[in-house]
Image (tube, rainbow over all chains, first blue to last red; front, side):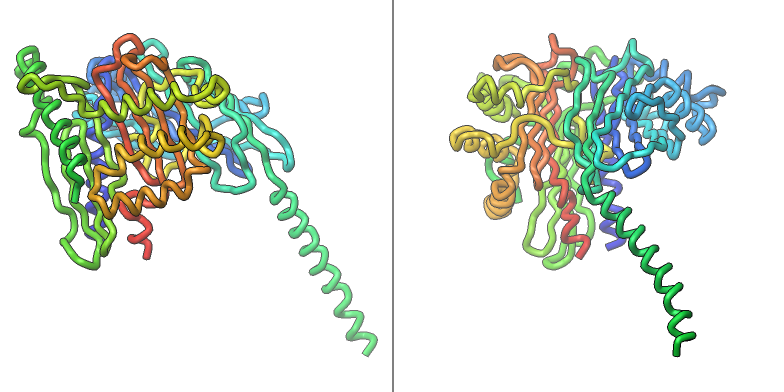
Length: 210
Length: 247
């Protein structure tokens, strides 16, 4: 099974090489957003076409040594995050870079390499309420093609009720409904804690009565 | 492993790539590493062929990644990428459109929708590439478009017929089992469209259901995107026979 897993990883890479080869003069920026209980996760995949790769590489490979160091990758990741506007219920959200992975420089030059950026921002999701995320990507607008989508929530009580974008998908608003299980979970916690406290108070008394 | 139609489609994609190579090679820089054409397609076997354990067969190159995972008696085709450039070419006086049926059936379906259904199906923004392309295994996006449960039987039949274009690349028995699974979830399947509805122009579409995700994405700006197509066929629950792999 280990061999099979390795094979699948290699295969995924080969698919990436096939389908990532897109328009030469476009910087494809695909963002997926996920709302969790107290956070928003961002997944941003950036694929520079071969003709505009030098523009991106100039920002990535800052020392010009033809390799992208982890520090250079993280600096670029933070640069991209700095070009985003992310709001939750109209309040600006600060995002923290959690992961950045850059394809080999030759793949980027050929227009088949992907820069993967992952980030997270903290939010407070009140229960039984409609919430919305506003997202705008201002990174390299002159050369970019944008995609933005809500990921299907893992939590069955979070529901995407609407997604609206501008015509280029540079900006989006995603509306969510939070279902009823979250307050129920909170209630179970409150009742459970209260019950344990009562038990703790009652038990010593019984001992005294006997 | 592949159906007769699936094999023909596969070879038509490879032939299109040869046409692309013939057309593009003379203007390519001598130092360029980029190559297209028949010589750049590879057949790979991953794992050890077995009657009981998982193994895979891949055939692919530029614009093609046919992945068949074999798990005991099952054959799983997802994820599979098809694409073509050019979208139409001639061999021996015959016009060949490798993804022509996908294109024509989709345009027929979107034009069979009522204005109210089109309002739900047609997205108000451009989609210039695959949303769940490379590097997105296991991802599921929130569905958009018109829900198949709201369509009358004739339109649902058109949708199923469109889905067959990808599923039936695989041989008869495996494809029939997969179609049965997809049809059982048809009520929760969505059809979304972005772009013009006049056949001959480029438009993106997506079919998303519990056990299927298909995207068809013309490449390039709206005024010049009919000659270069990418598609992807996934199963969010069973890419690379993940269900069998978990057992």
